[in-house]
Every structure is written in structure tokens, then in C-alpha cells.
Image (tube, rainbow, N blue to C red; front, side, top):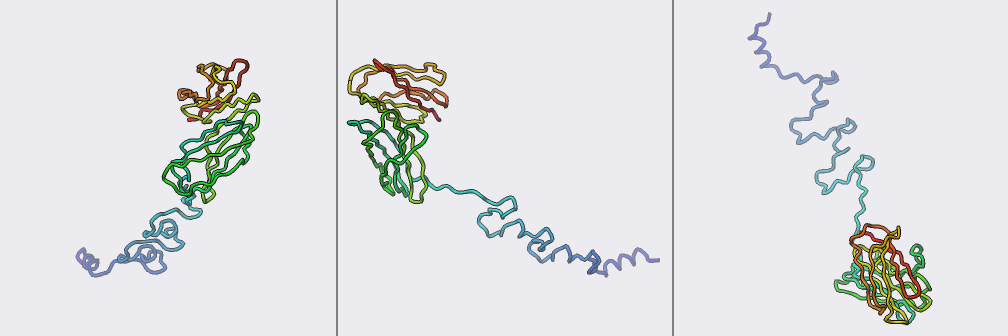
Length: 260
């Protein structure tokens, strides 16, 4: 019978048993060499680091196709134009549109679009843009044949890559008595501006702001003298509203939207 002393001596003299090749216990089958810096798994064993971990030298990991981490983010560039203002008014039965930019980056051109229903816009004209500018630039376009009734105008601001954005909408309401009502910006968040040009100057008009249910929200009177009438609408909720203008013999109603 082996004594305790002989068992200890045998354990000290014999190497550790790591299993034999093919017996399922071979350490080389599943434990990396102690000299390896890191274990990245083997191809096909489900532990292959290349299957799910990026190269450590990569600056960014965007995922791989089908692994649930594939990046589909599209980076948006800087918009080409910072628009300071876009306004319109009537001069000798024509509609004069003016706009001003504070900065332009790779801007190509402006498309002036026109509509009579605020839904379907058509190209009315085009103006070349400054291209690149850090100073204020002013532009003007004249529509010499406005339609009777509602004339909605907006700008399509296009950069050199073909990307674009639209401006707010300016409404010039052209009446048969050669009176023009300008309402802008539309939509608005804080202030609505109304300008009336009429043959008969110094007549009084009453301005009323109504909600969609016809409730009177705001009212004031002023002379029709071509000056701008401004209305603070910042206290109202987002939605559609009406500007009703009561002249001596008739009334005109303009729809506008508040969007904050």
C-alpha cells in the first residue's frame, strides 16, 4: 500500500496531466497558450473575436451587416442659407418680394415658387445666390402679373449639392379694386404682420384674429396707409387661425397657421 509520503513524492515528481489528444481533455483544444497576449477564439468555434469585435486600431465601430449594430445614420450637412427675412408688398399692381440672408455656404440659387391655394406651388422665377458669404445679402424678385385673389409665395433655397429647404410663406391678396393685403410670415410663431395697400388711403380698417371656432381672440383698428400692422400671437396654441379685415363696405379673411 502506498504511503502518504510516497504519494506526495510522486505528485512532486510527475507533471500535471492536461489530457491526451483525442480524449476530450486535451488542454490545447480549449485553453490558449499562456504566452498568448489575448485569446480571440478560433474560426467557427463561436468565440472568434473577428465575428463581433472590431479591430482595436479602428477609430469608430459602425457594426457589421446583419449583426444588429450596422450603422445607418446619414450625417446632415450645414444648411446652405441662413434667411433673415422674406417679405412681399404691392407696387403699381406688381408684387415685389424681398429677402435677406445673414450667411451663405455653397449656396447655388433661389427658386421663387407661387401658388393660389397654398398647396400646389409652381416655379415662378429664379435668382442666383452668393455662393459663399458671411455678410448680409439682399435679393429682390418682381411678379408683374399677379393673380386676382390669393398669391402665396415661398423660396426654395438650393445649395451646390442639390439639397434645399423652403422659407416661410408670404401671402399677397390682390383684390379687384387694386387693394393688396400682405400677410407674413405664415406659418408664424410669435408675430403676424399685415400690410394693406389701397387706392383709397386713410380709410379705417378693423383687424380681428379668430380661432377655428370663430371665437374672437384679438381686435384693433388702424388706418390703411401702407404701414405694417403687427400682432403678437405667441400666447396662442399651435393650429389654424383667421385674420379678418373689415373695411367700410366689405371684409376679407386670411387663414394663417401658428407653429412653434
